[in-house]
Length: 329
Image (cartoon, rainbow, N blue to C red; front, side, top):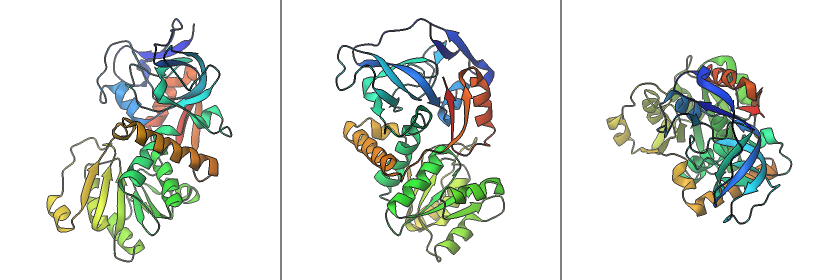
């Protein structure tokens, strides 16, 4: 019987349990994946805490991002076969099709082949981060040569993906980080400029970097008081993209400043784009092409063993990581 991670109540990392469960068969439109590795992301931590999507039933599975080998296919599945090496695209309910464990059943439309030069650990660290950044910076912002983008929470996997995508587009990547601990690493990873927010005023630094114009785009998963800082730092007629709400309190809209500068504030979630089959395929092609060319390279911070899943969640909660945390199965 495969080892599966589930939780029977919300709470801290300790609620995650590894259980031996029967091997299940996929439905007509599903595939079964023999999981080799899975990545962690912030949404899963919130789901475990009961602060994300509703939990449909306990015990609940968990997890969006896995890589492995297809070992069973449903009767209506076409284009995929047993033995294909694929990784999952987060286009399903995190509890209903959770991928933490040695086996996972997911909708067939939610997997894609990945470039052969990637191993399973790298393949478990591509679709969530790169599709999220692609949707915001390419689809929404149309980022291009000569543009500049403020990337907050830049040491996260999505933040690093955004730095790489900004470079691929010919734009200037201005990363922010709270303390100076990660500044050198972010510069090494390709950030053109790094602003340490505990020590520097974001708007002042951005204006200095851009010659007083302001950034073309701000790309932010934090919200809260950070929103006003982003509005102050972008140019007249600029765009502030919000793809998360890491700040624990409410986010207030700075209406006057936004109106005076004709700023567009655009929240989005990845599901908005991958619900559209054409957009999803466009995103897959963009990411695959970038991975193949080397413009996009997943950065792995640390790997854990399956039996260390609680420790992996606890480590992510410390915010010490730079890039993706992956669990090997």
